[in-house]
Every structure is written in structure tokens, then in C-alpha cells.
Length: 396
Ligand code: 3PG
Image 1 (cartoon, rainbow, N blue to C red):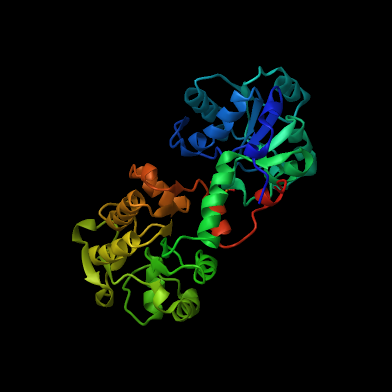
Image 2: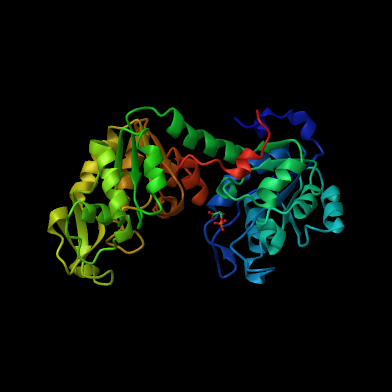
């Protein structure tokens, strides 16, 4: 257990400069924030600190700049969106490594907010460089980590800084993520099922290995089902298959027994661009000239019943090519079944990445118990790995 922001004496935050690492790595389109979910997710932490009279200094990365500043990856548009959401000005700190930046943080009004430029504009960030971390640490009197989405990165602003600036505690978003994902792994209400999809089984092997002993069932979807199909000796036509993972797939089928459930049928087409000729077939009837692009309506119904009978559902990875209708139907039906289950008291958790984007795009994020803001971080946490950004924080 890590020390949390809620455990600090709130009265002592008045006037303090609080350095908050957030994950504002959001999609930008024509210089405007496309999806502000991650910004909104950290508002409770920011608003709480402002309400206590703290001076809030935010650090985040954006994208993957190569070897230095990249104007297209400036956090300025994110600052503008944050101003709208807060209804308050946000001071932009162009050069957070300088003495001027330190002076600026001291001059912020109580309850004021500043946002530093992209931490990845500094080569030391991804090297977890102690000197850069020292610069960042000078911007605050204490450290709050709310960047769950970046917690799997041991970077200067997520790891090294937490050793230099104390107390170093978890913000409300980070705490919430660890609680929901942690409880699913360690103490789930049962029956507990996991639904795993996505294109490749190679990226999900550790996840399946970690989940199998913990779940009552794992339901598989997405193109990765095809690697399992081929491992079972089924024809998969032109579907995406990882031939170098057939052995692993066989092992998982054997270990999983009746806890590992594969789609009974699929939606197929000759090509992704030829959706008009798509059709549903049982999994043993995939013609050689077709490829699998979604689970079929029967599988969607079977999975839907299992979801509705469960007390905890964890979902990671889409069931098909959800960006290209009609191959979004399987993913949509899982989201619908989960939303209905939530209403009846099931704990429904969407474990980040593509499935979170799908649920958000379908306008159903509010109907889940928890939608993780982490992609890689959620995956690594669910695989049982220690997240360096979390490990560096103070123990409770
Ligand atoms: C994410 O979007 O998963 C996080 O912000 C981490 O970004 P990264 O994969 O570029 O480190």
C-alpha cells in the first residue's frame, strides 16, 4: 500500500508548491485535444489541491519526441483545454529546468495552476536522469503522482523525482486505478471473468498466465483467437496468425481447460475493405479465401450471458476491427452487456488501451465501474509486474 494524498494533513497544504505528475499524453488533432479523458481524470486531484490553497505545478510527457523539443508535441494545447475545464488560468512553464521556472512557481497565487512543457523534450527524462529529476524536484515542496498511464516508465519525472521530493504520494486517480485493478487481481467478487481481445496473442501471454489462476473464466476474442484456432487444427483462411506462438497457444489451451473459452463463430470477409460481403460462420467453417474480423452474434450472445452472470468482469482488448463497421458489432455487444451488468451491481473494469478507446468512442465509459487511463501500464500491472512509478512512492 502506498501513501495517498488523502492521508496527508490537508491543512498543511496551504501555500505549498505541489508538484503533480499527470499523464496528459492525449491525442492532438490540428493542435487541439482530441480526447480529454486523461485530463478530466486528474481534475479531482488538481481541484482538491487548489481547494486547500496549494500552488499546483503539473508535469507530463506528450507523445514520443525524438531527441529534443518538437513544437508539434508541445503541451500548450493541453494547457488551453485544462484552462477550459478548470475555468481558471493555467500558467505555462516553457523551460521547467531553469531558475526562472522555480521563481515562477513561488509566485503562483494560492490555488494557482502551472503546466510545465513536455518532460520528454529533455533527453534525461527517459534515462531517469538524477540531474533532471533534481530540476523537476526544485519546482515543488512535495510530490503527488497521478500519472497511472506512465507508472510503468522509470523516468525522471515519474521515478527519480519521487526519491528526491518528499513526501511522495499517490494522487486520487492513481489510487483509484490501483484499487480497482488490484482488487480484481487479489480479491475479486466471484464469479470473476476476464475478456481478452486484440490482434496478437504474443502481447497477451503474460497476462493470460497471470490471470488464469485467478479467474473463473477467460473469454477470448479478436484476431488472436485465430492463433488458438490454428493451434487446435482449424482452418483460419487468410486471418492474422502468429505461427511462432502456436506452441504457447497449445499450452494455454491445455492449462486453461474449460476456463479458457474461444469464440464459437466469427464474422469473416475476403478483405477488410470488402465488408459488404461479410458473413457469420461457425469457427470450423472458415473458408481459405476469407479472414476473421470479429466474433459472430452467437459468440456475442454466449459471452453476454456469461458477463451478466458474473460479479466481476475485466476487459482488455477489442473483439474485432472495431474501427471499421460492421466489424465493431462484437466489441459493441461486449460493451453493452458490461453496461447492463454494471447496472445490476457487477464490478466492470475496462483495462485501458484500445478497449478503453472503444468504450469511450461508443459513449459508454460512464456505464462501467472503472475505465483505466493506462494502456501499457494497465497491462503490466495486470501481468503482475511492479510499476516503477508506484514503487518509488512513500509506503503507507
Ligand atoms: C501511454 O499513453 O500509454 C502512456 O502515456 C505512456 O506513453 P509511452 O508508451 O510513450 O511511454
